[in-house]
Every structure is written in structure tokens, then in C-alpha cells.
View 1 (tube, one colour):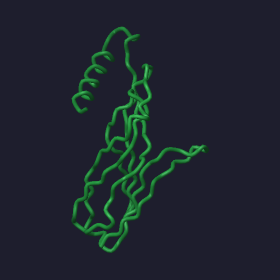
View 2 (spheres, rainbow, N blue to C red):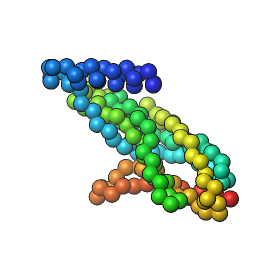
View 3 (cartoon, rainbow, N blue to C red):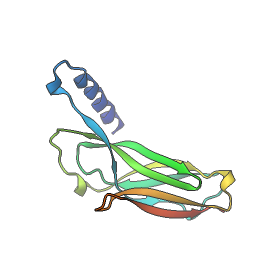
Length: 140
């Protein structure tokens, strides 16, 4: 998958440098909803944990691009970021199953006897407000 993404980026760069604007491929970044996560029941200060995130890419024009991560006090907000090729003939991949990617999380020693709130982006409501899967993980 990594080789495919590198090849795709090389093609995009080559096409976007073409003097003929009709061959330009446009893309944008988009967050895709998280379906589920694997988190420990509790954490120990100073330990590193692998957090697994499950999501679906909605079309074959979506490519996993990494995680958005924001930290504020003991709250961690995480989103799955995708590159989306625009103006392409895209096929739905919703029925293809979930993908799983992970990131490492260091439980900070200064947060002993605290609780982390992990917020994973799950899309927007009908009124345009962000929805999150929220999980509390105590630090022991």
C-alpha cells in the first residue's frame, strides 16, 4: 500500500507539472469516520501503548494518509486523514470491510492518577456538528 501511495504521489506530481491543465489531477484531504478502536482498560505512566483504529475508506479514490492528533491537557482528539482524488471515476468500497491502522501513545509520567479522554472523529451530525467516539482510560 505504501508503494502504491508513493507511486500515486509521483504520478500526481508529474501530471500537475504538465503544461496542459486538462491533465491536472486534483486532490483534497478529508477525515473519514472511525468505526472502532482498541485501547487498553488502563495505562501505566511512562509506558507506550499501540492504539488500533478501525475505519472504512468510502471509495477507491480515498487513500489513508495518517492520523490527525490534537492534545489538550488529558484529552486526545484523533482523526483518520485520507487523500481523496477529485474528478475521477470512483467506485464505492464501503462493502470491502474495515481497515486497521495504529499509532503509538506514550502515557506521560506527569499524568499519574489521572484519566485520559480519547475522542475519535466519527463524522458530522445532520446539523454539521462533529461527532466523536469517546473513551475514558484511567492512569494507574
